[in-house]
Length: 139
Image (cartoon, rainbow, N blue to C red; front, side):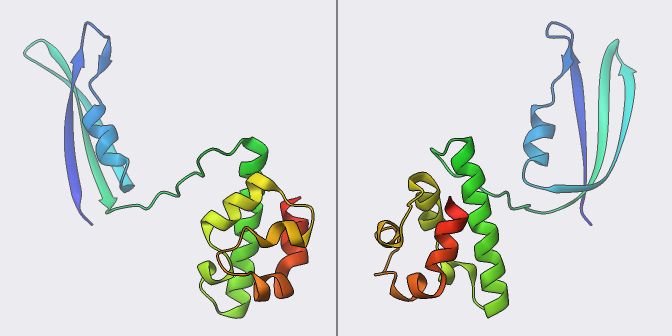
């Protein structure tokens, strides 16, 4: 496991440690262990942080432009898609793309016909296989 040591200086004017570097470093990594030590040197307060980490943690992008109800619907649709894909041995994007599910969450179609225009293809096999379940999950 890689290790990183970051030392932060206390900013007396703002009354906080300058932690931008620490936050930037941790935002794309999964920290597995940490230790912190406070010390004073030349009349200034310092904080040294020892981090053991895994590289490049992927963060799930949040759908843009969805309200809280639509975001919850999008999450349910993606959970449904994952289950179908896993059972059928397919990649999730074959069942439906993120963009398609986000659009379904946004529009919340009430009928299969209204839902058909959301899919990248005619949606024929998707509608036949999963249309009713998708409609039920979206609403």
